[in-house]
Image (cartoon, rainbow, N blue to C red; front, side, top):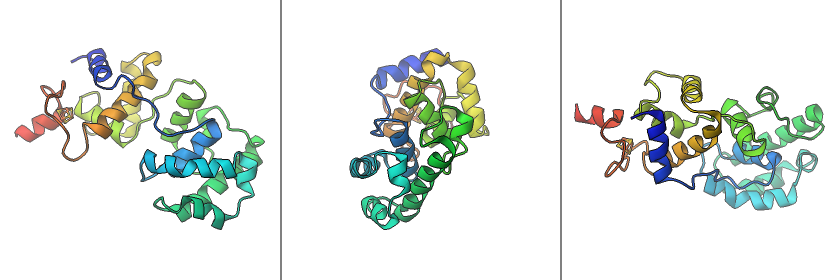
Length: 209
Ligand code: SF4
């Protein structure tokens, strides 16, 4: 199956795939991304309305009482660390970027807790800049669908996707790969019945051995 055929089949399965972290601007997106480490987007969406109502910008969050922030985040795993991390990020925004979110990958990656994947998420969701964030779902699915090799690093996967798809498809492809990995091609017990990729996927081949 060609990369474009994979794109089309994913589109058939998940035409409405999109970012599931609720956010109104890049500041909220950065905070939501930090909070989403090792937890679900749904859990994050339960706490962010109260968090953003109380601390609507970097200045407000930089002055926050950490105990109060922990109270808002307490339903999330690692909430104590996350409370400290988002306050630190708010302080860095104030000190280094006048309280505004930077708009390049390089500058975003200078912020605490923002790695390449998170920077790419912020770029595509908030600044209309083509990028391909590769998370655990994207990596797994790309390897099963032979868009990348088993031994490829996360960066290899990103570069291969960037070569195989035109820029205007990057954002949609990213969302469809996440939805496919999250809801169907799961890490354990993927839902393979009727899958359009079953005839050539690596997982099926391994299983048949
Ligand atoms: S057949 Fe199963 S493992 Fe292979 S791509 Fe489809 S859902 Fe994933």
